[in-house]
Length: 386
Image (cartoon, rainbow, N blue to C red; front, top):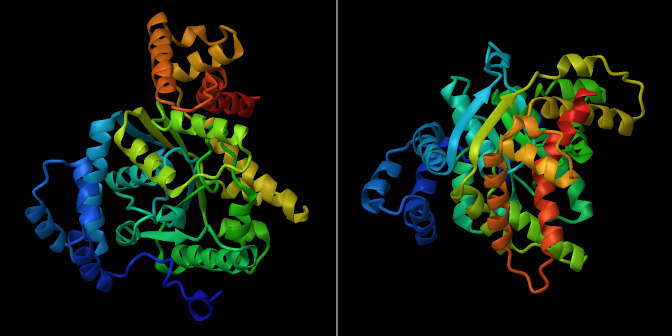
């Protein structure tokens, strides 16, 4: 399928190298961008930093030097460790893949994955990012400079079909023509309760641009599930607060300010140990599916294959086991943690609950919601073993 002829990707694609110079100039002269960068690196000498920025002539330069350094700075400040396993499963010929992962952190899921792929010599991916996060013009400039492509979210039902077709064509074009890997979350938005499920709509979108049957169309994109495990989710209290607000007011909708707060909180606060597992590529499992199944059944079967790979490959920490036992009122996993671990998690949990300010704060409900966030990955993992 020749996507070049029928689609114009200009409003969603990353910047081209001949656009890098102007983009960098726009960033270093933007006060909002300077303020945001100082948030991460307060003692930066802006004149020197601007000169360094202007020395980057390509996206590759920018990504491998500045973006890499910024992400590692965040990792060093806010994680106990950042690790990856399953490297041996990466294609030996660096064949482009579609990495699909569970979604915990708005900004860092893809950023952490990219620096680790870069470290193992595989190369960074293009990243799908929702336009709801393009809260300031400089953010859009920055993410497109950093090789991200834009997923349009707030469009009418009628526009949605065109938007999905274009996005699907862009993904296929990137894998098959540009020969670059991409990262995309398994669902739109983060799983607030950590009950990770691949959305059928994501797979339907990926299928749209193919000209074969569903299974072949998906296989052509070389899907590679990734399981992401954060010991602590800095946004757990914000997610719990949102659950109560939605419970108390079914019409409640998050504001852009909330998204910005989630981005900041996720980037700047403690995550403990963070681990990424590259699971098995799934083409062999897809090839075994019955292609005569009804379309929605096939989509559900493909989603289930991705989910199981993710569930099987989570990494667990004492807090997951403590949360499970606290939530279920059992001692099923008491062998996986000590009294010190339990006390530490109870103090952490109370500290997060204390951050929640609501007029009619329902602490028992909020506590349950946070416990579910740390328990659901373990529950899904156990179910996948059965």
